[in-house]
Image (cartoon, rainbow, N blue to C red; front, side, top):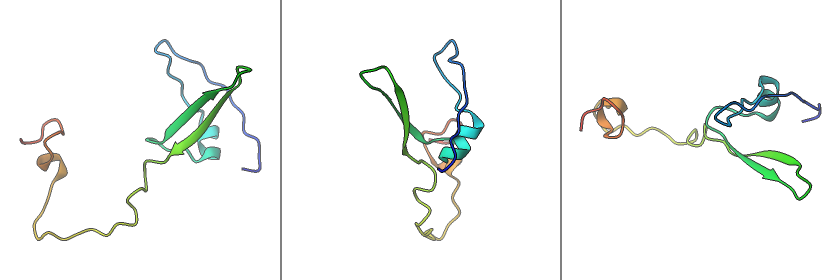
Length: 83
């Protein structure tokens, strides 16, 4: 990242924060990514993207099992799915 990006956000009542759009774009942060929060001995906060959720299986080839599947119907943990 060659350009410095800086923005502010407010901690809400449930202690959640929204990552500002300019920061998300500059850092390549997407929904589902994991962030690591660190506070050093001087109280300085740093945040690092440690896990990018999407694209993890992008190199896998689909397997044809010879029948149609529907994950929402077939998976037992999805609300509304059949058991």
